[in-house]
Length: 296
Image (cartoon, rainbow, N blue to C red):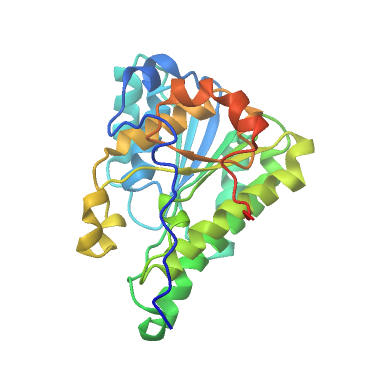
């Protein structure tokens, strides 16, 4: 039979004007107010997670829980310095050595947050894994499945553990870090892209089950940056590394500073120009856009 036509990458890149670096409209120090907010960031020791913690500090977050398997190094000091430079109060910082592959570890972290913070306003499910790009028959079965264990089950476990606390009050906002790769079908990416696609649907299930209790959940594509995870892709894909980490971190901090219920269950690309994106609310809601649907 002829070669199968691969699905084009309709990832919404051109839905709005896109940026490659942060810009004044999303400056966390001046455009986002997180006073009184307590946030949990998974995968917080490096890359997008680390940058997001620093951006929340610039926006005046009251408490920042850092969750990761690896060492945090001097991150707490960097967070405090960022808050001071932005003339914001020093946040309370929790360093949680949490492994999203272990529910006992996740549950222990959730209990620590409840004890130390007493509330949780915002969850950034950022921890992720990208296995080798290998064709299915040649793939390593453990590394292929780990894409789902971290990118989907890990998000499920963290969400399950902290939802009871979140639903007691506060902003009740969940941001799941997916990827533009969720929208593509390419050789070798079945594990990673498939898991990130499933995460988009999981986000909608959160809304179906908890919207009436005030939860807001949406997914984001963070950025194309040369992170440790991103560099795991084949070199032929390195052309996508055009963005800074701050375009992701500052956008997530900007979006979560105000609860916009119309974002429920939707996909947002962090490089999009936020003023332009927000101006299209009616178009997006009326057309029920930025969700995964069958077209016929």
